[in-house]
Length: 384
Image (cartoon, rainbow, N blue to C red):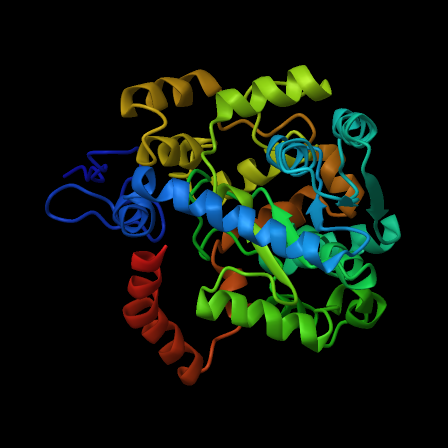
């Protein structure tokens, strides 16, 4: 008997996606989680904007050389964040770009044009390309992932610059309301514990010691207090996602950055225009998990957030047109990392091979997180 996976009544998520569960009423775990955190957004958004403006006022009062730091990839979200910080909120901004070795030419142009038009200071940060490619190779062969190296680099570049210039607030464009659902089964970011575990016993760990930086203790304490207490004031240091505080309308975002900053990409709605191997990431993911059709999670989340009708999300997914064929740049990618086709295929065989390197939080840490979700978060939501 053929088995058909159930699809959510509201979005495109289905039970073939790792971590997705659908209840008896036909609603998926992604939509239910969204509703718990963001379901009352129309009533909350004015208060969220006031909280954002208060944090910016806190930063100005410190009278530092820079009020905020914005990690600038050259993509749509980070470009728009920098635009808002400078043009709408009149903040003194420092932009930092991590050069991940696969930065597209139009991303470099977007970055140069943006910082020139906005008149903000900008830093490029990177490590030697041979070492970077060695790290990508090691991670890919061991875990089937290479993105954690890039994610780790972004974190280090951001925190090093923020600490060096004593910038009180880091503002990113990560949108938990509208960006695709991720699960550790098919995506790992640049967590320091995962990074260390993958390179344990490898000479690369010492060679890449600059990527082990986690910030000075004062900033780390301030970040933890900001997250745990939910007191959204910048007393020392903090990091926020701007889309948690403002409407994130992609039609407005694209129109603004294209008209005001001359921003460009291959496609008008391209998600990761800054990375030349983003299609390799999609291909690798689909090789491991055939249910993860490229762009499915992105369009599905827009349906969850009410920014697309489910039918329109499905139409966009069909129009995306990416199939199962290997990308044209796959051979070049493998040459960059120094891996053979056989090694590439071997890394795809066990899609969960990375999980052995995932650090396990202590029982006490898990208990604290449970208590925060059960007791503190509901109180904070009522106060906001």
